[in-house]
Image (cartoon, rainbow, N blue to C red; front, side, top):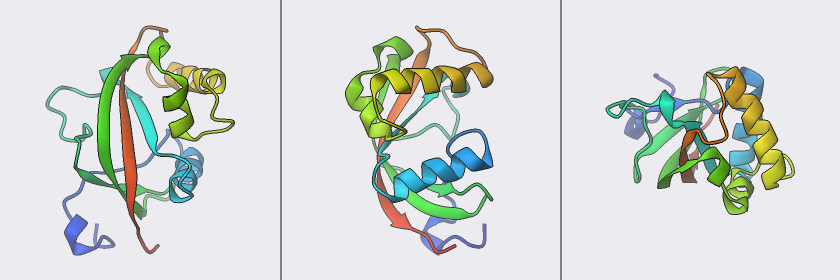
Length: 136
């Protein structure tokens, strides 16, 4: 990606969500400081997957058009089952009302359309900090 500052040329790049609209919506929450956490189904990461989040690593977040938009740094990784996610983590995800009940509804819907859902499915839960907003 030639649009990236030199220090991020080899960074992992990704977009939040599973559509351009959702990528832009979640990115806006990150840029506003409301979203400082995210999660993924653990099944989506092989143990040696180079894209799997790592504490201390800086990744580039893409917008819905695939353009580099921000740099985040992973500050915490935890593993828990879907039904063990607590209100503090749902609040840090910063989506919607940021309640645990809404988090569960929205994420169940998301996981159902992206490989399946069970209440005891394993999740990789990541907390991050915004490092830099990139020019687009």
